[in-house]
Length: 368
Ligand code: EPU
Image 1 (tube, rainbow, N blue to C red):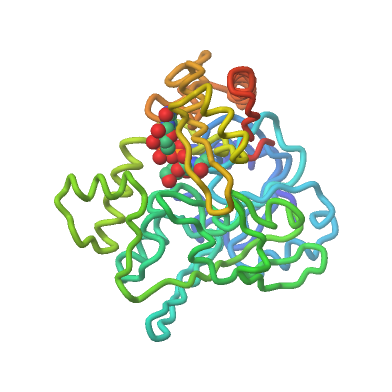
Image 2 (cartoon, rainbow, N blue to C red):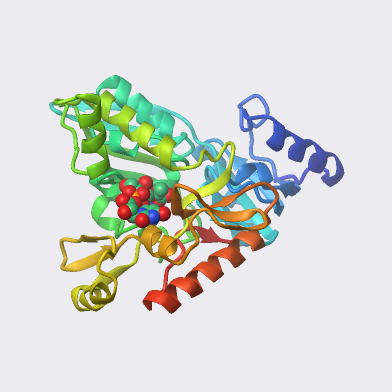
C-alpha cells in the first residue's frame, strides 16, 4: 500500500472534501490509497476541524481485503467512519481513518417478504427512498435519518416507533484479525436501545460491508408514534400508505431537527435514560410533569430532551456550541465551535441534569 506524497495530497484532499459534495466518486478513488494528514472537517456532520494522520476510502469488499492484508494497516490504530453523523472529534486522530463507501442496492421478493441488501456506504436516506419508491414497507418511519447503511446496525438507529432491529435480517462483515468475511444474523448482533455488539465486543474488530433488511411487500404501516398520528389527522389521511408515512416523518424531522448540511449536529447527543419503576416513582413525586415512556420490560424511559430543557439549556449556547431551539437533546455547532467546545457544553449539561434530577445522562455520540 503506497502512501501518497504528503504536501500535494494534504492540500488537494482537504479542499476537495470541503468543497465537493461528490467526494468518493469512482472517478477519483478506484483503489484504496493511503493519504497523510487529511482534514476531517467535511467528513463529520458537526463540521468540526480535526486531522487524520492517515486516511483511506474503501469502495468494495476487495478493498478491505487488500487494505488489511498489509500488516502496517492491520496493526494501526484505526477509526471506521461512514457518513460521520454520529461522531464528535475533540482532537486529531493519530491513526488510520477508513471511510466506507461500498455502494449498491439489490432486492429479492419472496412471497410477501422482500430482502433488500445495501452496501454499507449507501446513504441511509437514499436507501429508504429506494424502499419507499418500490413499495417495500418497514423503513419508512426511519426516513431522513442522517448517516450510512453500514452505520445503522452499529447503534441500532431508531425513530418514530421503529428501530433498525425490527427490519434487520443480516449483515456481512469483514473480520480484520482473521481477514475473513462473516455473516451476522439478528440474534448474533445483541441489539439494544442505541446499542449492539458492534459498539461493544466487536468495536474496531469487524467492518460491516453490507446489510440485508427483511421488509414487507404488503403496505403495512406503523402509526403508533403520537407525532405521526397527530400529523396524519391534521392532513386528513385515514389510511396512510408507506409514502405518506415517509412524507409525514420527513416533515416532522425537518421541523424539529436541524439540517446537518446547514447547521452542524449529530442528531441526539445523549441517550434517553432508562430507570426502574421505583426510581421513576420517586422522580415523579418531585417532578409530576416528567416526560416518560413505559418500556415492555417494566422499566421507564425518560425524555432526556425534557430534562435538559428543565435545566434551562434549550436553545442556549456558549459561544458557537449550543442546544437546538426545537429539541434540546441535539447539540449544534452554530459556526466555529471546536469539538472540545461541544464536548465541554455536554459536560455542563450532564452536570446540571445530575444535580437537579440525580440522573447521569449518557452520550450517544462517539467521542474521539
Ligand atoms: N422534549 C422536551 N424538550 C425538548 C425535547 C423533547 O420537553 O427539548 C420532550 C417532549 O415532551 C417530547 C418528548 O420529549 O414530546 C420526546 O421528544 P422526541 O419525540 O423528539 O423524541 P426523543 O425521545 O427526544 C428520540 C430519538 C430521536 C428520534 C425521536 C423520534 C433518542 C436518543 N433519540 O428522541 O433520534 O428522532 O425519538 O422517534 O432516542 C437520533 O438518535 O439522532 C434521533 C434524532
